[in-house]
Image 1 (cartoon, helix red, strand yellow):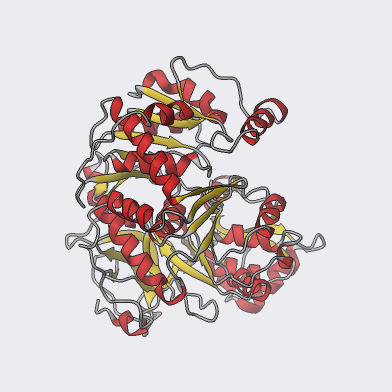
Image 2 (cartoon, helix red, strand yellow):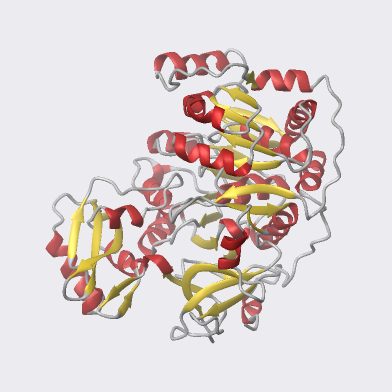
Length: 555
């Protein structure tokens, strides 16, 4: 498809990025630590590490890892929430050429075992709160060394002792565990400081991450993301930020977990490259605590998923925050709903800009211009150096316009090398001409904006007509009595499938009939929900993405 979207780019954003400026993530990190040495880099629970601290501590951790005999390409797993130990472990590993395997701390023993075995992980860095899960499966994996840390380990004395005591003894957040021979994170830094870090030359071809997909549609697969993939996406993201960000001047709220590709890339790495300040939120599900934290910070940027923004809007005190410096709100991970975006703009004065990407694209693929005055309902424009094609089921390219709906396919330097040790799965998602099939259905409008209709697997077929849950959810969310909503297809004798909505009420008096009548005003008859279920909460993934699959299974 012709790159018609280029004419919509802000003047400061180039059509193509310079892939030769940096040789690796290590190159970017070391240059940022030198350039921004005295500036704050990462803060958590009132403690700040500056870029010079990140440089020194990650160097120490990398030197300790090298003392184990680990070489380029060997795998290290990191299983932690958003705490200061995360960037230290991450950058220490990347600086010596290890491949990082990010692990969700909330994994079950079965999920953890699969990921450690599949990746061939040699070392794991884990917060003690979840060590009992690792204990169950450790002897079935190839892990040779276990590094443990406590929540407050990088906080200053005596706060460190107090936080660790409260977490373990008062709140009882650390279930009993016993793994012989574990190494405390603090000791790795002390021992590493005495050692020399051997320089490891890295290129774009070296593997930086095995980033596992969520596994919601089968076995979790490791997307092979190279240093070249991540360097490309960092160049693309920082180019996109040019119109509204300044190096060394940004403070970003990092509430989504860093082990998720969106937060890892958009927050941890992009703002590290820009010399920005990441405020790490360890438990964003504690919304009152989250808002209390925001009161202390003059932030300029925030990323999140739709449910996070919606949750903040419904938390007392959020509308009283100081938004005077706030200029970038970026939504991704799931569709941003119009009702949430409009309410967000009303409360904060900052438009909620939608972005789109996948684990397989490192992840940024499309982003709306950050200069947009308001939400526009699209997922944006393909970023610099990115090609997009809309394909039908026979792999034929479609044209532009709302009648040209097909699967969104992407090609660019940020697209993964493939799935780890799964060539057949890689072949399923890559076209002959090198495009990645995303599994998302959409179209490109006449200006080049990409409009996503829905996930291919979530589409509802009513009497032969395609019904897209996103459209239904957007309409339901416009009702003032609704706080959250999800639409799924359920079996129906007459129409094959029917639309069902699952709703969390804002107004306790809301009825199913009132919602159906509301939908009748905005939707053609076959799209109107036939069933309504009210719940206290909707099932969500670790980043807050609503899991329609579970709603379908439990209808």
